[in-house]
Image 1 (cartoon, helix red, strand yellow):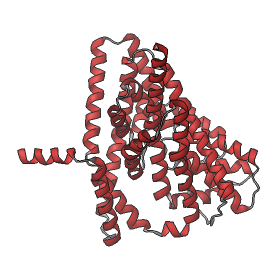
Image 2: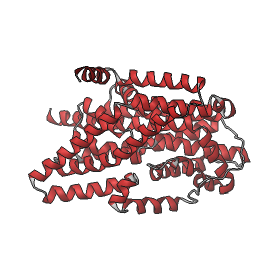
Image 3: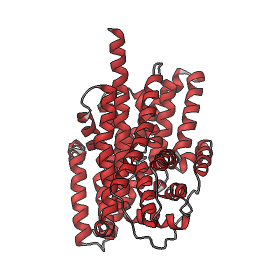
Image 4: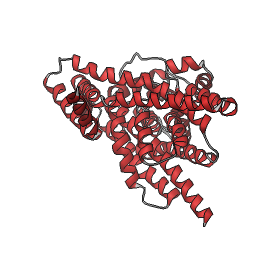
Amino acid sequence: MNRIRSILAYWSGTSLVIRILCGLLIGAMLGLCVPHLSAIGILGLVFVSALKAIAPVLVAVLVCASIARARGGLGSRFRTVVTLYLLTTFCAALVAVVASFAFPVAIRLNEAALGEAPSALGDVFTSLLTNLVSNPLLSVSSANYIGILFWAIIVGLAMKLRASEVTLRVMGDLAECVSLVVRWVIQAAPFGIMGLVFSSVAESGLDIFTDYGRLLLLLVGCMFMVALVVNPFIAFCHLRRNPYPLLWQCLKESGLNAFFTRSSAANIPINMALCKRLGLDEDFYSVSIPLGCTINMNGAAVTITVLSLAVAHTVGVSVSMPTAVVLSIIATLGACGASGVAGGSLLLVPMACSLFGIGSDVAMQAVAVGFIIGVVQDSLETAVNSSGDAFFTAVAEMKNQKESENANK
């Protein structure tokens, strides 16, 4: 028993990043050498399913407990972080517009039989409002994070007004227990990522880089531009100091894991742990991180904009710059409405294409292309989205501390 404990202690004491990289390399080699051993891929499915199962419970409990126990003075930080989330999502869409105009890409459009996509922006808002007030238990079971956030905030406010101190302590203890369960699941991340990478390499190989290389290069370039230039520039404007040390830490500890799990919701525990190591206020980040999972969708805005303009270039539709700016607004709002839905950003491409008068039959073929390159596109999109949650949460907290220090001088 002592030997087992020592092994587990050594395992948990080793850097998670190093363990993830080892899992990545082993999974890639197995995918190339023995692609027929599909049982290896089950590890990835089990890992992601476990995180997706516990993440909604974690969000509901943490947000509710944080709101109930929150002290005053959080308002300015929330205003700042919400502004940062929405501003950077819009800027990401603008970056995609400029890049698509500078490097227009046409794609092969084949017949595609895919799911039904929203045909207008009104459909997105209808779905958004419907999800907001859906049954709270159903929201948790179906991972409807908009509904989870709404009801958790409402219940948290009610507990803040009426719950006894004993009840609040019990709620806090429950949040700690759920967080501990999540940390146990995360310790299995290297095995899960090994399975995920094995499945991707075994199924797709390197074909995606040759068949859709230009489109993938444009998407990747835009997302790198957003993550490495636009986001730190906006952070610098708020903090007036070098944001890159913080950015590298968020990309390494949050973005890397999100890239391989391809789930912002599953990455919430990683971001929460990162914020704790950064010394941020738990009352703040326990709400801002789940909120970012819902409305901080830089990568999704890039995907919607690039694929929509690629369809326009393919069918020969001329897009003016004012129309492209309107597309950026639609992509921003649509990306927020699509959060928490598998393939949500791709399924909003037909809605954006309708702005150019392009029918859903043609646009849905671009969605099929998106699913083909999704092994890279969706991974990088999730990494940009999720690392940005932690990054801008820290920026909002640091800005608040800076303002408080200036006010006390």
